[in-house]
Image 1: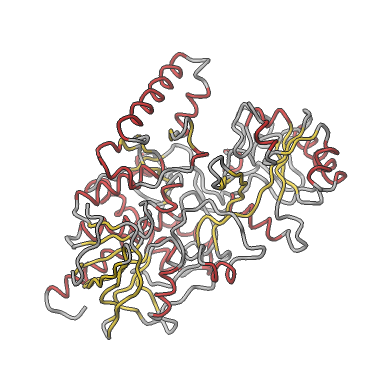
Image 2 (image 1 turned 135 degrees about the vertical axis):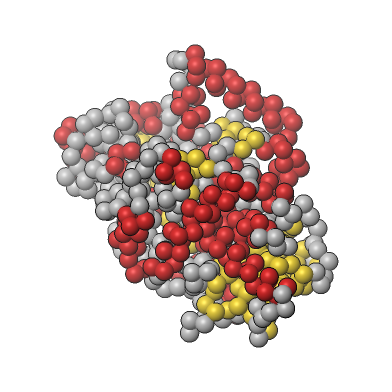
Length: 576
């Protein structure tokens, strides 16, 4: 792998800017087409926010869907997206995604080191809509033993520390199940011992855990594939300009270590920098107020490439229901002074004995809904400033059983969290409300109502725990409703939740070939986008798990193939 800046004047067929899942997909697919490919990443790590994520990949109708017997069809999934997204994105782009997706997965799995697996139960989020499924559409990358990457293992963005154990060991749902039972089952004890032993051995050999899971596994597998295919990779390299002429974008200027070099491009430049949401000006202009202060996403998506794209004639879409995809987050200062931002996806909000309230002490949303809808509801209720932050409330039993945010199940040693204010404790609901500065009467009424609903299994206020997706995020051992439980064991606890953006939904407008368009609908030749740089085909709606990474990978492939066709035409002496 080349990490020093290429010589000025070099020519590449395809240049990809950004090394998350979408950008790495574009680089790999361009190389599979026989192109000379350069992958440029402005930060010191590869992977972007994809490396932080679970890397669930929503691509319907793949061979995995068929293999596990999913009852799905093109008509079913297309209708589901129509009902979920509607006119918030062009249907032609959604259809291009559905047409290309299965083949993209098959090509990756037969021609590269990238492999996925389905889960027998992984439901769409908007399960109440006709056409939703309980499994088959959401895939996850298989674990990857990355020691074979050698020194390049250090290039992969490490996972969020709070999602690891023992100072850096990644674990998935299979590991968690065994670790939770290691004192009760010989099988789990042996599994856990092997897991932990392998972790420490790997750290001694490689400096970090070489057993990569989830987003790290996806990026590791794509990096291995890119290396084998001869992709040149630059890190800590900034793109400062696009070179254009009457034929469109024909080159770029790169800056690495203070040195500027111009690179010629015959096929196209693919933007995959992760969106605009860390761009100071765009963030203030496009995100709702109060603008989220905390984000669990990676630092690379500064939106700088969007400024360059605007200069070339591109523009942002305006039809998204939300400008970003959301997750409620809590935050806490780490011992090294950095800020830990923890996304509350599914592990606590939907569990029995936990509710969320505003400053009036009252529930305002179905806590079991998706993380994206949860934050959308926070903003909808916040016209008077009463729901940012929101308060996640639990009793002692729920905290010990399920954990809350950065506090893991078991509830051991909560004193540091109480000391720094991450966790608030009250011997009574009145005391908790007083410490939080929220309405005690409202809080007690909310708890009284939830305690009644826990007995009947019916949430008369917000219908919590009624869909397949919501029930899946509850406690399957708890009845009559796996998401509803009484709060009656003192003391009581709270964690503050804030809006957190996990990726842009508003992006650059493109066509079904991922080519960027001017406002008049004409094509900017040689300029493509994928991932969060491209206007979301989901229209700022979150229909199911992995609806950012799945389209990112597929449109990365679409962009790469089209750019490769342009480069091939140039080789033949034809107009691009």
